[in-house]
Image 1: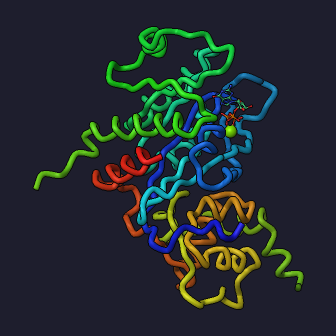
Image 2: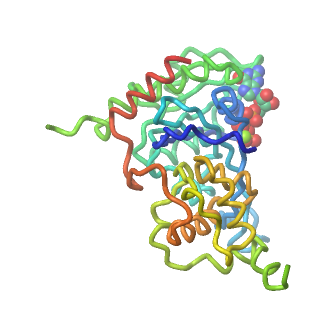
Length: 194
Length: 118
Ligand SMILES: Nc1nc2c(ncn2[C@@H]2O[C@H](COP(=O)(O)OP(=O)(O)OP(=O)(O)O)[C@@H](O)[C@H]2O)c(=O)[nH]1
Ligand SMILES: [Mg+2]
């Protein structure tokens, strides 16, 4: 594990979130781009039970895994990619992560589009961060036209939709590029007037 | 190792012991915050094993989340340990931008350049 240190010249870190339903390919995408083996931390969070199971106590402690990777982007800057489930019950963890993030990649599996509704709702409701939707292609994924996916997910016309093979480095990097380009159009990232 | 040390080294216990205290540094720490040990300063003799491991790990620059992953501890707990070590002068925050501030546009442009070179 030592030898994994950043170069001494690196003095800035930038963060992008990778969110999406379970098993959608978050860790795979992070691993494709990362210069280190993806790392994992686990956080205990207390979640309010949403009344699904009346037999359970009001509050429960759940372990949420946070997978992440790193890419040294220049002599001074390291990019960190944090993968996290985006469901509502994990919001407490998410909120801390979202703070200061450039934006999020929302990974979608077209075999189960509905599974991404909750994540998208949370992003739009709770943050102002830019996001791009990544359609992770599985061999048996139905091939919907992009505009149908946009309609199904109720996305704004400007929100990028990128097709991706999360196992492929260039393809995954392309998704990140689209997100950062999109972020640069946001008011938060306009140059302050001189 | 004395009984007391065992007690303090226990992750869950130390979490209970450290959480809830007011830490000025703690609020500026995020998972991606870059940390590095202050040159040549080993952890204080009163440090717990976790803190000593932490300072040793930070001989080179690492993000808080990386330290947490290598120590197999939650980020929230490591943030508390780190803030103590920053306040005692054993660790420094390498990424010197303020917390809760988004990266500047020119930083994002450099990120874009870097990604395009992949
Ligand atoms: N064919 C194909 N398989 C993929 C792709 N991306 C991921 N997989 C596979 O899908 C499975 C789940 O991928 P993960 O990256 O673990 O998904 P995740 O979103 O991190 O999952 P959780 O953390 O459990 O929510 C793995 O077996 C991957 O190998 C892809 O682009 N194409
Ligand atoms: Mg995962």
